[in-house]
Length: 88
Image 1 (spheres, rainbow, N blue to C red):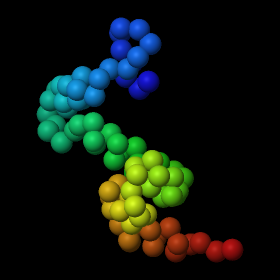
Image 2 (image 1 turned 90 degrees about the horizontal axis):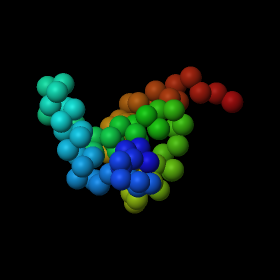
Image 3 (image 1 turned 135 degrees about the horizontal axis):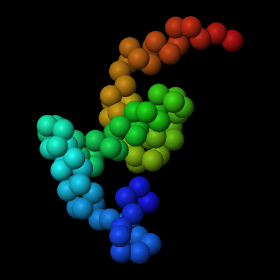
C-alpha cells in the first residue's frame, strides 16, 4: 500500500488520505492538491516515461486514448514533438 494503516495489514481510507494530503498542502501554502491530483500526476509521469497511452487508458477506464491524453494534460503539440526526430 502507498499509505499503510497503523492498524495491521491494510491501507488508510480514502477520506484519511485526503486529510493527510490537504494538511501537507496547507503546510506548503497550496490549495490545489488532493487525491485526484496524485492520480493525474501518476498518469502524466507514466506516459512521459513509457509513452504507453493504451495502458493508462485501461487503468483509468477511459473510452478513448484522446480522453486519457487530455486528462493527464498531454497536448497535441507534445505528441507531435515526440515524432519530430523519429526515424526507422
